[in-house]
Image 1 (cartoon, rainbow, N blue to C red):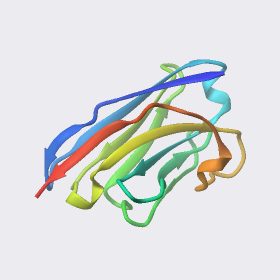
Image 2 (image 1 turned 120 degrees about the horizontal axis):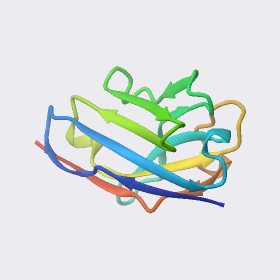
Image 3 (image 1 turned 90 degrees about the horizontal axis):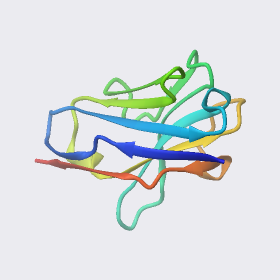
Image 4 (image 1 turned 90 degrees about the vertical axis):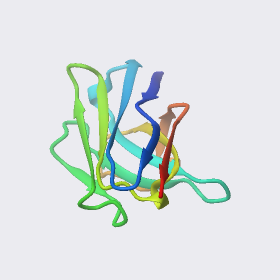
Length: 124
């Protein structure tokens, strides 16, 4: 089992920045690929960014490329999502997820463990 707890969400004006954190406990954190997803009311959960178990490979959704950066610190069992140039369309609940090593998947069902989510609201 892996337990994931997100933090860092909040209300920010358009153009601002936030950094989300996801702290992991339980089984070996460094074994898992990690990803951030987000979900808005009435929409499906969508992939935002992912990182391989070692952090040497990352992948971003096209909608956030150049604005969001995923990183991880395996010594601290934590994955981060730095979000810059935020837009109202980025408003959503953001979830972190842990999945088996291999290619970074953009499919939610490929991830085994999920946090409870943190709300990000971007005002215009």
